[in-house]
Image 1 (tube, rainbow, N blue to C red):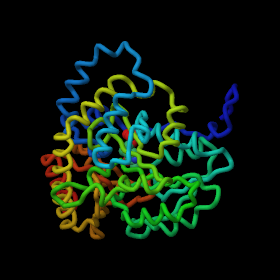
Image 2 (cartoon, rainbow, N blue to C red):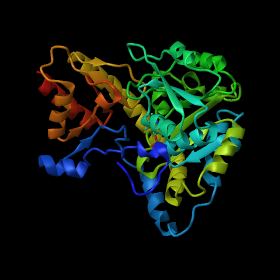
Image 3 (cartoon, protein in one colour):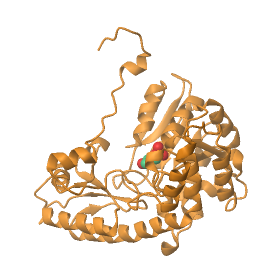
Image 4 (cartoon, rainbow, N blue to C red):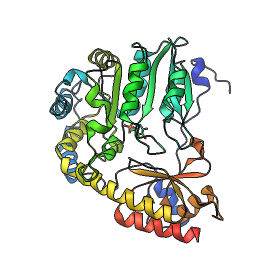
Amino acid sequence: MKTPWDVCPQVTHFKAYEPGLSMEEIRQKYGLEKIVKLASNENPFGVSKKVEECIQKNAMNAFRYPQAGNPQLVAKLARYYSAKYPALSEKNIFLGNGSDEIIDLLFRVRTIPNVHNVVAFNPCFGLYVTQAKFHGCELRQAKLNEDLSFNFQALLELVDGKTSMVFVTSPDNPSGRLADKGALIALAKALPSSCLLIIDEAYIEFAFCEDNAETEANVSLISELSTYKNVAIMRTFSKVYGLAGLRIGYAILPEELAGYLWRVRLPFSLNILAHDAAIAALEDQEYKLKTVTHTTKERVKLFENLSQLGCHVFPSASNFLMFSLPESAKITAKEFSSKLLEKGYIIRYLASYGFPNHLRVTIGTEEQNAEFFALCKEFLQ
Ligand SMILES: *Cc1c(COP(=O)(O)O)cnc(C)c1O
């Protein structure tokens, strides 16, 4: 479409983000009383009570600008991580308006338009695709293996002297698969030192807990940041801390790069309520522990239940499960998700990720999971 004004050429090809129906619209359309959303990997326990109190108490500060650079939250996160990994300090922490903003800023700081390329798997997080386009940067994508495990060799083959960043999501979305730590270290070593390896660990907290004897050091590269200077890690308050609506993401990365990101970031991108809520969330580790313990337990249960129905379920270290219906099923994955929707259960149909026969469901409360499973049984029998 022609516009009466000039915009950057890369922008003319952009399409508006198409949101699905809101929960309220679905309620009205199907005449439902209760809606259960298991489509966006949000925390089923809602906001922690302590965070809610903090937000209410801080409402009266909304007239103030946040402090540029968010020093209190930076200090809090630095204390939290340096207690476990002494090599890390405040200088390694960067904050953004969700991981979304951090991804955008990484492109701004690390890529020269029409010079650099970036490498990721296919499918990958949508923001890598849109921001690469926006920044005039070629995105090269390697195929995952048939079982959706990571093919790091294929990834490496796409890397050349102009590759400025490689993105790996672990645990991956939508499969839930955790990358092997040894393989990630091998990848970090194999990349040219000018190429930054970014591990998106939005779901990493669901990959380790006391119950399954995994530890953070076993599953995350965070313990290796001081050894490998070309590695960055992104995490978020959106999932395990239950704050998706407030938009707070953070990265732990080499000091020099963090410095550049701070220089480029808009000074007030993290609002004052979000900033204080994140501090309260970090102080409420009990809520986080409860979330992880619950998710781990329910994930095993739902995995077994869906498998028993004949579904193929992918191994997940995350707060969701990706699955396909049994071959004997008389309905398609798309019809299955529509039928669930009519009953008020929203899950993610994965056609837009390139999986027209697959679905992704977020682990909900015990009751939600049981009801979801009962519906699955009903639709498949
Ligand atoms: C949910 C999610 C995030 C978190 O994004 P925010 O902007 O922090 O909410 C990041 N990466 C992946 C792959 C995700 O699924």
